[in-house]
Each structure stands twice: as structure tokens, then as C-alpha cells.
Amino acid sequence: MIDFRYHLVSIIAVFLALALGLVVGASALRGSVTSELRGQAAQIGKDNQNLRVQKRAVDQLNAYDSQVMDGVSPQVVDGQLKGESVVFIEAPGADDQMRAKTADIVGKAGARISGYVTLGDKYLDGNQLATLSELTDQLKPAGLEFPADATPYDRAAIELAAVLVTKQASSSGQEDPAAGQVLAGFKTANFLTYSGQPATRATLAIVIAPAAASNDKNADARNKALVAIPVALSQYGNGTVTAGNTDAAADGGMIKAIRDESKAESHGSTVDTADASAGRLTTVFALSFAAKQGKTGDYGIGSGVDGPMPTPVPTALKKK
Image (cartoon, one colour):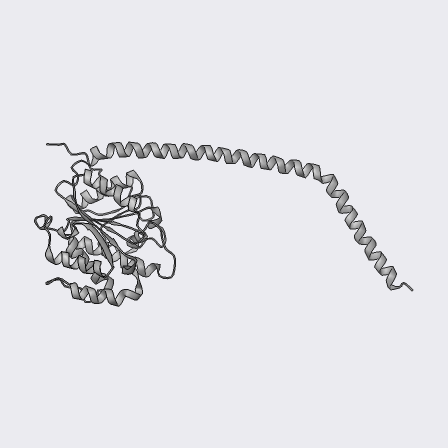
């Protein structure tokens, strides 16, 4: 009879044989495997180096394009916004550098900049919606009416638009006491801050979208609140452009939300390349088209655009 010790010895012998086979096999294969891995690592190193070279070339080309655009833009936009005034409204999370560079080219186009309004995080805080609604009612200028179906954000946007922009050039440039009271009230309540003289009311507006798209559970609600602003500005002024980067035109971005709105409700124009020199030039063109021809469009490289810029492309105006 075969006893338990015989089984144990047999099992140990099998495992020893397997272990010996692995050692012998590994020793035989070690040289070829190591050589192949070294070859792959060397190729990866070469590929990475080539990618670095290509990236440097692309960066240099982009820098060159920007330098050329920045150099010719003042001549191209000269006079495009002559006689107009522009107010800037920054959404929470907007790029300050984008606003500054856009303001620079807008000024070179001949426009007066009335001021800068920056919405605070509190403006989009759902927990503050009742406070915002109550404040809007308290500060509402005489004669201003809200649609019956307007949401609290719609009403706040309409009130701000009514004191920031005007369709009458003759009404622009002078401090409006009622406008000043509205802006001061929103500022005191920490819903926004401002600089310059936005209460002098501009004829055109530029809204700077948040630099990053949002995909959290509150993204849709925040974007609806933000979209109400260019919609209202378009109703009370002669032209509005919402400017941002390509991320703002992606899912969860403000520009994407604007473009998804029904075309029946005018939201002005959008530009999703305002972080580039060409995009800022397009922003000026879009404002000019709105002011002079009443035309709007969605421009840039994101989904749903009408083209890279308004067409026909405006020509430089001759100085008199």
C-alpha cells in the first residue's frame, strides 16, 4: 500500500522539477529578453526626443503667429469700433489675462471702455438665490419690467443689462444715478465688483466666460444663470460677444451652453478662441458686425460654429 509519505515525496519532486525548469528556461531566455527590452527603451527615448523637437517647433510657430497677429491687429482693427463704448462682464473663473488683452485690442479699435464688472462666486450660489431675488426687486429702477416667466437669474441679468448698456449712443458716456445705485447695491451685497465707470452705460458688451468647463451636478444650473446675462445684454445694447477658450465651448462650458440655446432667443455672438490673438481679433469683428449690421454668429473652432470669423472680413478703415 502506498502511504502518505510516498505522496508527499512525489509532490515535492514535481515542484522541484518545475522550479528547476523555470530557472533553466529563464537563464536561456534572459539574454534575448533583456536585449529586446533595451531596444524598445532606446526607441521610446528616440520617439520622446522627436516629440520634444516637434513640440518646440509648434511652440515657435505659434509664438510667431501670435507676434505677427499682435503686430498687424492694431492696423486691421483701427476705427472698427469708433464711436462705440464697451463694458466687460467677467464670469466667476474667467481668465483675467484674456480680459486684459481683449480690452487692449478693443481700445485700439477706437472704442471707449466704460468699465469692468466681475461677478462673484456668490452670484452663482444656489443658496443665495432668494437673497439675489429680493435684492433685484429692491434695486429695480423705475419703469423696468420683467417678463412674467422670468427666473430670478433672468431678472437679475435684465436689471444689470438695463444699467450697463444702452441702444442710444446719446445715453452713453454720462453717469446714470439709477444705474450707479443698482451696481452699488449688488456690490455691497458681494454679488459683484466693478472698476471704471460702468454706470455710464456702454453700447456694446463683452462677456468673458469661465476658463474651465464644469461637469459637476450644478454645472447646468450655473450655466443657465450665466447664459441669461448675454441674452439680456443683447436685448438692451447694440451688440454682445461672449468670449472664451475652447474649453468653454466643450461640454459643461458656458459657450457650449449658449450655443445649445434656441436660436430663436438671441444671445449675441460667441468666440471660443479668445485666448489667441486671432480670436481676440475675431471678437472685435463680431462686435463691429453687430453694431453696424445687426448680425450675430458663433465663431471659432468648437462645435456649432458658423465659421472662424464673420464674413465678409471687415477691411481696415482709412483715417480721415
